[in-house]
Amino acid sequence: MTSLRNSKLLPVILSGGSGSRLWPLSRKSYPKQFWPLHGDSELSLMQKTIKRLDPIESILDPIVVCNEEHRFLIAEQCREIKVKPESIILEPSGRNTAPAIIISALHALKKDKEALLIVLSSDHIISNESQFFKAIECGKEYIQQGNLVTFGVVPDRPETGYGYIKVNERTNIDNLKGRKIIEFFEKPNIKDAKNFVDDGRYFWNSGIFMFKASVIVQEFKKLSAPNAEYIENSYEKSKKDLDFLRIDKDSFSKCESISIDKAVLEKTNLGIVIPIDKGWSDIGSWYSLWKSSKKDLNNNHLKGNIYLEKSSNNYIRSENRLIVVLGINNSVIVETDDVVFVGDINKSHEIKRIVNRFREKKIPECDSHSKVFRPWGNYKSMLQGHRWQVKMISVKPGASLSLQMHHHRAEHWIVVKGTAKVDMDGVNKLLTENESIHIPVGSKHRLSNPGKLSLELIEVQSGPYLDEDDIIRFNDEYGRA
Image (cartoon, rainbow, N blue to C red):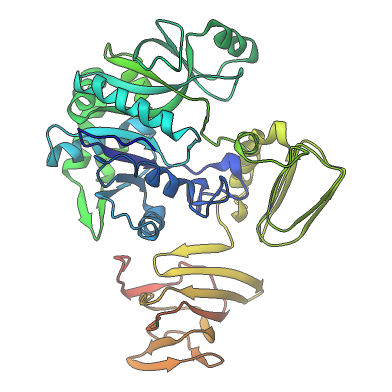
């Protein structure tokens, strides 16, 4: 394992995507970066992104940029790997990579005028980590000289799913040096992609960057002045909220939605590309995930409860139920507790179009899982009928829900594991396994887990209106009241 020394690097982890090309596993409420999708590890893609930097002795605690909905997911996943982020920055809305990166750079400069940033997406796979560390070490020399470094993946095949960067000379992965950027290309057709690979002066655009915070801000101000003003205003008006930094919504919403490539790197004279090995993937589709995953002798990747015969070239994943596959080839089959997706693996990227149609029709499964994560734990919808529904609620040790009430529904709680502390209309009661309590409509109540083990209970709701917006919060540990 390579050990990197000298200048300290501040990681900026971008975690704002929804990953709809990996639907139904990845959805807006719980996108792909929070899932363990690569190898046998139980670490999520985001956790792997952070842990990947451990061998760098000079690495600092990361800045993570995400949206409001995922803030507690980020905090919990960082806690699981014993990482305390330097800051978790909440974007009011998605504005592509440039605003997120410039906000992070401004935040870094507030504490260190010489801050050096490495910017990574939270959902990438990098198989050849030792070569990646060497590329980072090489990149340090260039950013100290005031260059803006992006890492280009040496292509091993014509790929139409990635953008490309043209440089001034042919690539040699063993000759680690920076190459001047000539031009950026959007995702090409197959003919152009083949020409790019044959030419030898083209890289896949990895979306991984290194630069001095001061230099990227300086170039952004010069090349995208109106956007720079909006971003600076939104940062100056930001507010601290628990462990999060909330960016001002009004100023931020005026900023153009633009990538750092288009805003700066396509226009600057400071751009440098450093090559990284082909063992990189942005997991942009089920096909790309299949390509980067371990496979059996028949080229199948199997995860979960699966029985397979006479089938090849498949990606098959079961989250719950048994999947039996006979005589199926070149397919992706993904089962969750509320959706089953079956498709041609070579056309799997088209699922995004279907998800957009579902969104137009307001089909809830397009964005939300039946299991919903909250800062205190999670709940899962089990059954639903007219005027009633059943949920399974899991509360982490020491955690509490908000003090709340409902105008339209009553609730009945049955503890199946652990100990529950229930505060109802000012009266506290402890419940253990097989004990229950009724919460009438309009009662002010709070559920807590005072124990050291997870609390699990069944909640039966009844009433004329059962949606989640029928919650009036009076007090909340997580700032949601």
